[in-house]
Length: 338
Image (cartoon, rainbow, N blue to C red; front, side, top):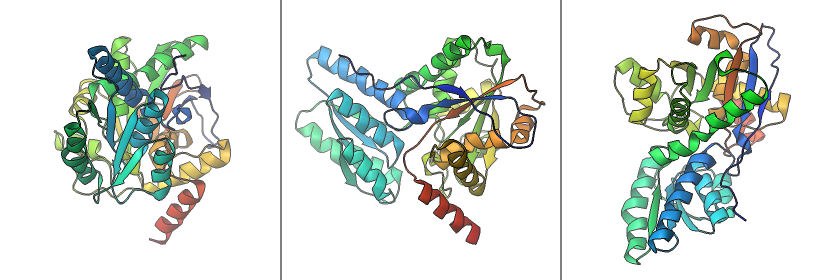
């Protein structure tokens, strides 16, 4: 039996009590993926594809390496467990012990090194993988987001959404906006690839949401070219990339996408409210997109139009496994004190 590295997730209409006239919000629940986030799609696709190629070449099974203190590492570990592959994940010292345990429970070896992702990634490539290569193993490096094969995997979310809209008798042209959170641009790039394949790129407006302190896309747009952030200060650590993938930046410009930046307190409040309303715990990175459901005026301002009760808006609930409800409460209280 062939076990899939990702699952088709529900597209559910949810009603948000905000005292305003709301469009029809449909939430894509990718927090239900095996690895707890959308990253299971692309990272699982990359590992499966490369392992198949290695077996066809007679190289034997791959040995997989990832650098991530968050959802990418967990997605790699989970996918490798499903495919019976050895996996090593290097995480920075800032990684929560809860996430380290989750990655280990998924069957991966975890090495803690460096003060941030960049140092962990460099150590992985220069030291850990180099040593494994000396043993003659066929190694695979898994980047958290900047890989075209990963985007190809993420693009399946668009195919699913279009199929699910068809099942609900909703035309893609009724969709007035597709909202997603953006860190390094992996999910965004996958959405672009999926829309291009279905000849809908530029026809469905995309709203990209970030938090202040991790807003590398918005700062790059203001600069007119990609920039690198020296410091990442947001609590939305899953959005914590110092740079945006070039393809994501170029696609954003090409298709006239919209950018929204929120405060940490905004997204923490939304995460807590969404948990109370729907019993789903999501990270601030995911709460950034869900925030627009509670505040449709932000969405309307980004799109430059009023939304009616018949308009459809798709929200990608990208998921995440780094925080508990108690973590969210603690972070919110800490920000309140500051």
